[in-house]
Image 1: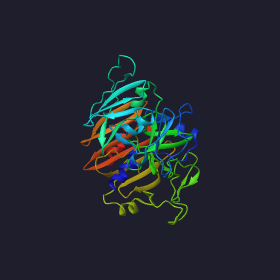
Image 2 (image 1 turned 135 degrees about the vertical axis):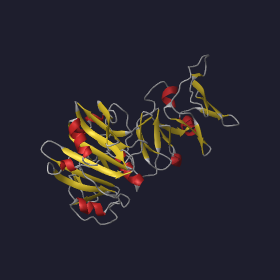
Image 3 (image 1 turned 90 degrees about the vertical axis):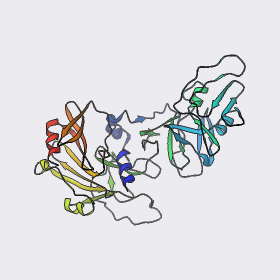
Image 4 (image 1 turned 90 degrees about the horizontal axis):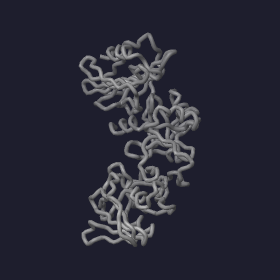
Length: 387
């Protein structure tokens, strides 16, 4: 359950937004998010659980079968022999499988297992390029040699030799290759939004970002202007409206049983307390000054309460452990650390306003998110009132 909770909080996913509204909401996350324009060559199939697993190199669809790809050192690794032979290379390995030679009649190279060093030379002339590092060395896995897929961008001297496509790894999980590089975060692909976590894995189900919850369909697409399979309404921008499920969803053949809604809503803090294994505390500084918008638990491991007034929403979270549970991984101009009652509190924001506060104390994690920001002294007073 702990892994489920942390995965939900670190994978910032948005479902069902219109492109224009969602793109605006992600403006502050450009360092984590990238829009795939039509100029990129994109595979014409969206991720589906079908028996097909291809990479696209030099315009050729190369079937990998059950081998899939590996993620190693943040790089997409593909079977060397399968891909190289499909591209017309003659592949020969030495007796120890430590050096593999490739030659297609125009260029040739040696691939050294365990060495992040790549070069190529003409098959018909003297001279070779300098050694080039790609961030990962060739490796052996189950008697199969894997190389970084962007090795082919290097060999053919074209950063778009490897095209953009969805492909499954050996565990059957979908990743997205952007011209050979592993995608992370939000991606707009063929006018649909997807989210890949920090390991590049395409996400499904409920995921939080900036204090809101969004739903990713089974094929990874973000849902919008609809009711999710578990009965929660998301608006045009994909945001859950904060209300309880509008319908009672029963398990049927049309509902994907492996997607579990981790969010439980409660009318009072006392009701939420009964679902949790730790004692809930809330910022006393907000009592009487803000109205309560909603009270939730996430996987019964995390407590969150959202306060609202005319100026801003304030989301307070707490959970066992010392992880960052804010769900906000934007880059901010202001990054301060202050000592409050013996705890190191990270304060992040822009334009002299703090938007995120993260700290831990007594093996409990806490966070505060302020939608429109707040003066540092004011948010410090709120934090002090939680001790």
